[in-house]
Image (cartoon, rainbow, N blue to C red; front, side, top):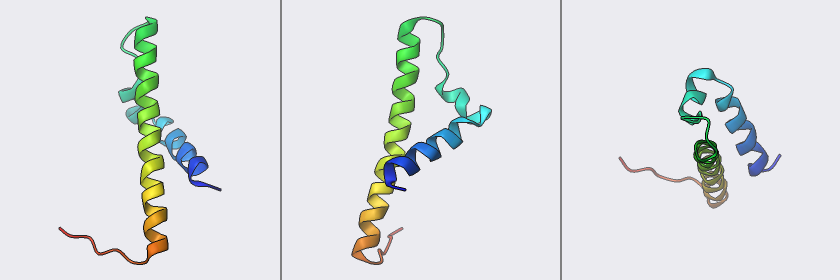
Length: 68
């Protein structure tokens, strides 16, 4: 399974929880509201995918020291 598939599965799992999915529901019934909600879901998916890409690259370079 590649990172895109993993990102999709993670996004679907999160969006299947009503409490979480509430943040992505359209505010109304107009097309503009649906477009905005779709854009939010896309941004959420892209954030997951980018995080997976970052971790994949980091794991190929060896251990990383995180600063606090």
